[in-house]
Length: 269
Image (tube, rainbow, N blue to C red; front, side, top):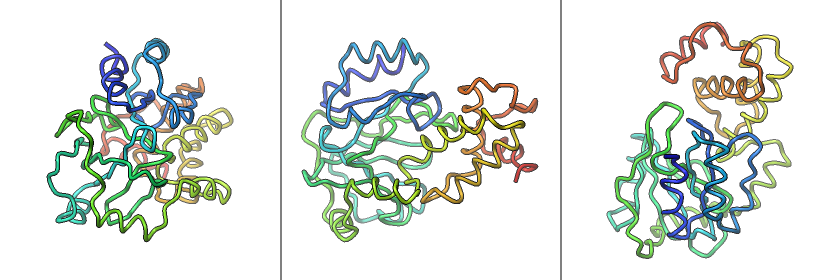
């Protein structure tokens, strides 16, 4: 059964809006506009329609005021050390990601944008953001899973130290609009922005290597925090398929492993 149909109704019952996510990706399917679900819940009919249109799609949960969710994204050992002593067992739902954890907290009823690096290896997703939901696949083939499942009870509030960090950074959702005007690609929009750009580049690129070079340049120059090179390569592969330019793909098999992607990138970089 589709992940959307298996998991989506559960999250809707919790009052959490969900959206489809392209298979093994962190962005919605090409052409899907998700912004409306920051302010309105999808219906079960929507889930059925999406499952039919995108049968291999994963699920993302929209954070912010409607879902009453703020999610702390802890990345790797650096993030674990940063958060040590700040986050304590308090019943918060926790998701195991490919490199760390997502910890779910209650929205503070004050508008908070998304931010990278509130502490080393620690990001936050709140108003204007979303997180990949359990049972969806990461680009590396790992699967997001619950370490602590939601109980249905009200979630704990953000820890005081995290709240103070956010106040000091003066995070507002308007930061996304300002960044867009300045040409900066924020971390919560990197995969979607690069994928859309790659689809456009694919239509005018003569070789796959040239496409990768263009997207890599965009990644380095415009992204607030650039993506790993192997992830950019997978975005380019998916863009070729979506743009109908499968002929651009190298005869060398592109794998989802970091080692395989690094080997393939060697002549490009």
